[in-house]
Image (cartoon, rainbow, N blue to C red; front, side, top):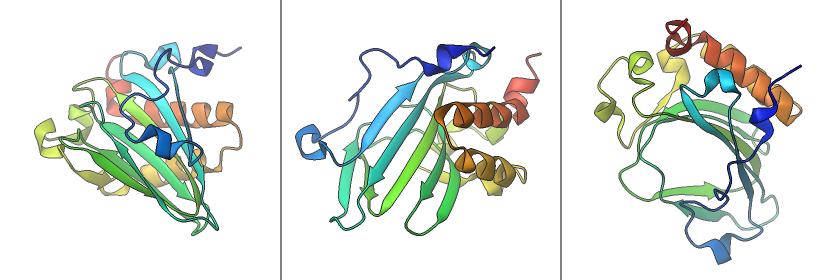
Length: 173
């Protein structure tokens, strides 16, 4: 069996922080999932965004993010490029240009959880994005595993493997 708490959406969170909602309607699909209980001391939620813009004009989505750090895994189906990065708290509006077809999985962490892994004061991460490969070598393997997942359950399982590899999860046991 598995803990299906990861399959439950956070109530009332569908459009939190998103700007220009009327314009964004139909441009992309996004949702949040609660993490499995094993990760709730560290992770607030997982979030997914998927867009299909091939043959359409690019769209710029604006978001006022919560002041927390995220780890993001992104795949652009048009270019075949994947990337993973640690994203610090944003002090201003975040604008993301959506073009081609793609999807993002984000992991929203509880305040201060990533400091040990980041290895610096968290204010050094404000308004920054750092490729995960620059922080840890094993991130590429996890990135590929997460991006190859074919179902939401497979994504959640692959993210679990990644989270278990982080010192923040290992030191608490």
